[in-house]
Amino acid sequence: MKKKLLLLAIVGAVLLSAGPVLADGDFYVIAGGGAVGTKITSLPYTINNSGFYFLSGDLTTAGNGITVAVDNVTIDFMGFSLAHTGARGGTGIYMNGRTNVEIRNGTVRGFSDGIYEGTGYGHRIINVRGTNNDMSIVFNGNSHLVKDCTCSNNAISGIFVNSGTITGSVACNNSSYGIRLNGPGSVIGNIVNNNTSDGFNLGIGNIVVDRNSADGNGTNYNGGPTNPLYWGINAGR
Image 1: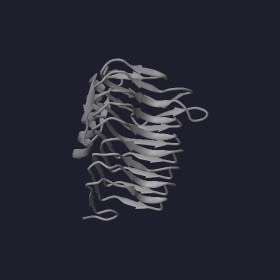
Image 2 (image 1 turned 90 degrees about the vertical axis):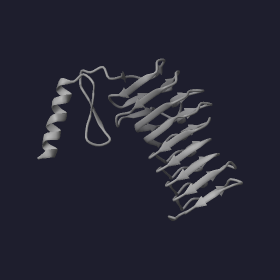
Image 3 (image 1 turned 30 degrees about the vertical axis):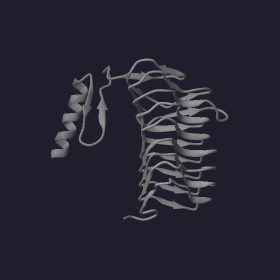
Image 4 (image 1 turned 120 degrees about the vertical axis):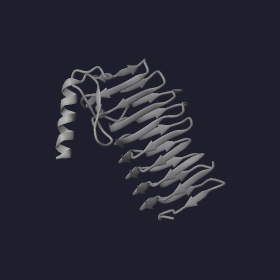
């Protein structure tokens, strides 16, 4: 009964509200007529103002997808995808020198670089699937977070982060490495399997490696920091 009453309350709020309505759990509802953010309806698209952007359907492009030209941006795929048509090419989401960008909840497919940052810092990628790109996630710069992502069947690699944290993610069936972290940072609770070259490719900075699983890769763990904290490789602590 309580759940039914909650559902009725959410539906009523959506019908009466012009903004986002929080629901029970980690999701929200957007009222149909509300100006809660900026809808991206076609590609290529350049974001020139900070704020919240969202997709309302699957989008395709024969070139580049979304260019983020400012800081402090959130892009919610809302479960939809960005896809490159034809042979792999272009960049799905391009950033260079940006700060505090969050990208979440969707798929990027068929690009040379799925999501790319050149020199910026402090980005968050959450619940994103990258597949059939050359490289799905490429984050140069510092202090990034990649969380709960799945990157598979890429022509080169799944996830590259120069510095930051990669956690709760899966990288499999990539033609080179699954996950690379240069460091400093951490790789915690990830799964890599069936990557042709390396499962985990680790740099020389201070890196915490904990509660990961690696199997069936060319090399499960390649490289490593000079001051490693390796806990629970292929196991728990």
